[in-house]
Image (cartoon, rainbow, N blue to C red):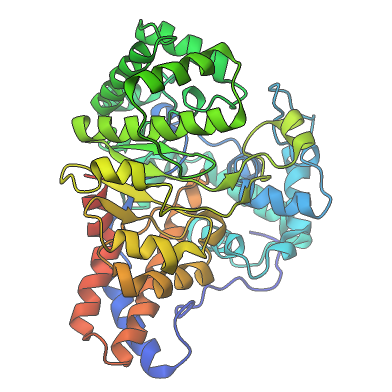
Length: 474
């Protein structure tokens, strides 16, 4: 880049302990995992990128527009989403020059100091694009030009980046209404990159979802089932799950407000479903319906082998005005208290001891780590803990997760790391942070003579590579 500013450097010991003995151990452990292939078993990248393999348009469209981690911080400081060119709910966008939006981002990059977004982005700037001056107002145009020019070259096409990042497999996440046409194109193209899907049925499971009535109608059209009858609705799910599995899916994913599950009788479930499809239901009935569907999905997982993930405990779209103008996933989601012990009991009473069933739990409520999640995962054979998620995938959150679940769940009732991101270029950075933190945690255990270094090496490799492959049946 032409403009010069303050140097951008990535310290080789970043995130390692400051105590010399532990730092030395962490360095040795990290050397064993730094270049392992990336297994990304759950995320939200766009399969169209890999199907079309077209160049990304520019720095703004790639690094700013899709990343709600980034624009939520800018919005919190009074910068409008229109000024950043974020698409609105109706598909329109403010007429903003992408370079001007990038300048706004650069001028405010100081807002991210100390956040995980800063770590990830600086990793991208330094390692992916070779930039050596920090992003700020003075380097904004040089950054934009360097990144945008690079994106037009073969080395920066989506498939080339996938291979350069040493990604072994990546899972996207689609609704049952998605035809998976991009996955079909990838499969038929002859390209060797492994991009699979995951079954996310929320729009046809949540009666309070704004798209539910139309989504249910389309669900019936796609499957040819009478989805306004309880048994037809269940058959439609089984059909779409089988289709997703044929397109590579190994997991389902469920983003519910709570972790409530239920085990109603067939007649009770049928009567509840009739209320749901009529549109005349209470909030409590909507919650009970979501709870029953989770148990039905577990039953289907036992039949078809899809690993079940639950991502509960988020108040979605808290900012009503923003939601009405811009739609979902615009940085206005807020963590909620979440209860697991009582909520999961109906499902676990039926399936908790089944050897063919795998349930991966996530949380945004860190108070549950040692009280609920660690003990549950440390007992039930089916149950595993997903990594520190979303608001907690910062280094501090990863440390808290390990410290509070290790005593009861150990390392091997967890599933390693998954990045759960829409920001494609940040995937290597996110996995690198996770590997460094796990090595730091393990180095402390070695230094305290709680485990030997050869054991720590085995664990580090398992967390980085083997555990996600095993848990997600990859």
